[in-house]
Image: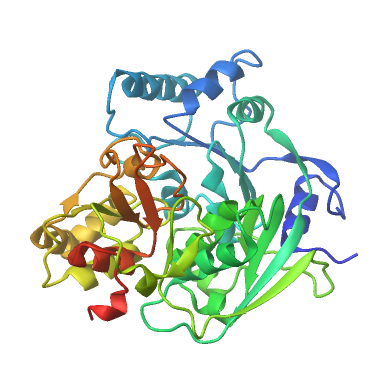
Length: 419
């Protein structure tokens, strides 16, 4: 019987010729990811099960949430993480100075391969589906079991196919596309399903934009997001030293629980209003919303292409006096490239502040926490109540272009209105 990409990958992991939606399978894990917040707790549970991890070369650890440590508790978590890495001789460790946001540094380091099964102690692990992998988030106790056995179990998800066509308008990005999709299907519209993205627009997207699509699949309740491997994917992987891999495609007769066609020719720069990612509206409809903070960064908006977009809007302009613009490159490599390209100088001259790689502001951790009743626009992926700070603060989600334009004007602004 024909299968989707997700079904084929899980079948391979379970050493079966075929799997069907709703079937429970036990699979071998190809890569396990954890970070500073949850490595220590997972390690504690792991030590109740075993003394040695199943494979120290298949575990990736990078600090990213509270880095540099913001308080004593954060420092303790970092120490627990590093102790585990040393104790278990973990090979793929990226400490402070080599660190980066986990969902950006793994592809950057060539650690994610098409057709592989990847789990991480972070819900946005689904990002890596952009490279044709089955990638999903799991909890700390599940990760402890993976550390010990190298295996986990899943219910095979139904698959939904999103065929994106048309010609994307100028200054409209993948972030706008995924916000529109989530608006149309809702935050539970893909509950425990695989969101498979296809179509000419997806084919034209650079890898950075494909990562955004798969990253925010979780915001629609999906188990994973995934995109077939093509020439663009292969080139990306080869540039990162990945030359041997087996790409997997959905069979022509594969069954989808839903197939959604989306023409983006008339799509506008989109902003998700509080307090759900599904509250998408055209940026121009929100021009009366004044902001206190703008944030360009996170696993959804801190890649080099995002920094280039923001710099393009900021070059020769000054951030509004009433706005704090925070820019955080997602990894040290991206930070260095942004420095070499003059992007960092552009940000600083415009009145922005630039930080070391960290998730910090995205989860209200540090480096940009919001006070009571403050309003922020951000390139992040979640805008739940209290997500970035005080419960009365508000977060609007947008692309780097829209976020930078808004920082200049001091209010939510369609980037087309200042270029």
